Image (cartoon, rainbow, N blue to C red):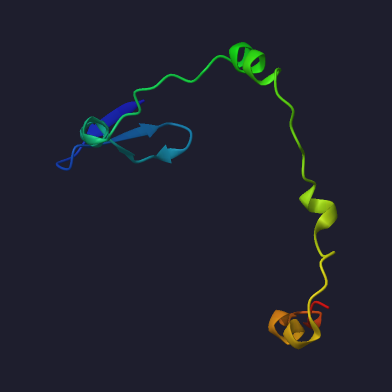
Length: 89
């Protein structure tokens, strides 16, 4: 592989199989980017902390489309697709 550097500090390697591929040097951008300086907790520590509490799971999928819409507001839910025009009831 041959690497060519142009005036914009872009490195362009030429590979024998796929041809040209553009690469950009993001080191200056990475140097100015704000870093997160906190560690993620270990999963075993989190499980120990969570094991002492009770939890509730809300199934939004089964509840979807189950809340009735007032007849006066049903026209506000109208949408059109290739299969026709529909409104939720």
